[in-house]
Length: 337
Image (tube, one colour):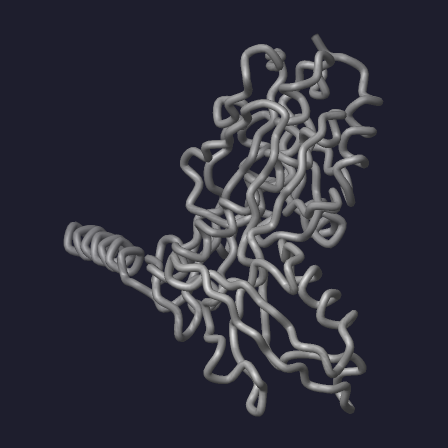
């Protein structure tokens, strides 16, 4: 009998050790899990003469993504709906490096904070705007008169003496020229200003207007603000998904009435210059993080609404398509002071 009991104890011990060992084995899967929940107000500096502090707070949430993962993390994803197994390439895409992903994420975050500042102030009734830095050349079409004259990285700043602040300025300016005219461009290259004269390509099967045979993208923009406002993200790796919450926080800090009504309001979504809210990734994990932080409401882009609703237990999920939608919804809530 003693031998049987001893054997049973030994078997249980071995199985326990095997379980511990298995939990520490690396797998090739990726995982997305709830991350931090952060108050946005401390990240936004507003000129003291225009700042209004309120008892409520806006909260942004994040997602923790990693690959490879441990066996115990794999097991957790099987039982917790807020933790999701994903292919490793969704965490680190093929032909990408962690460094390149970090640079891209930082650029997206930087653009998001700049857009949120302008849109938030504009919604609050202030005169805020972007001034584009020009049209950046990304490639040159074979047979283009720009071959040997322009190169990728050049930034076009004027066309025939007229400012080129956006890609639209250049496209519309070229399209309005006589097909036999010459485009006089001023460009920035390596810190130097150069003048380049280019003949135009005539309209053809793919272009119904004159063109110069180049591909372009925005060279960025500077914001013109009525008073100093600066967003300094904290504990955020990168990406554009905090745009909506940055925008609402800027709006609230320059407004005498508290949009939050004294509550914790969480949410997510990219922000565009026209105030529309775009979809993001990892909404299930962000809802879980918001619930854990005690938020009363979660503002969700329309494309993410169903997924956000599917994991919400105690938090109210609200579909938000524009900043105006968010402001109208929050204004309609009774105060909870």
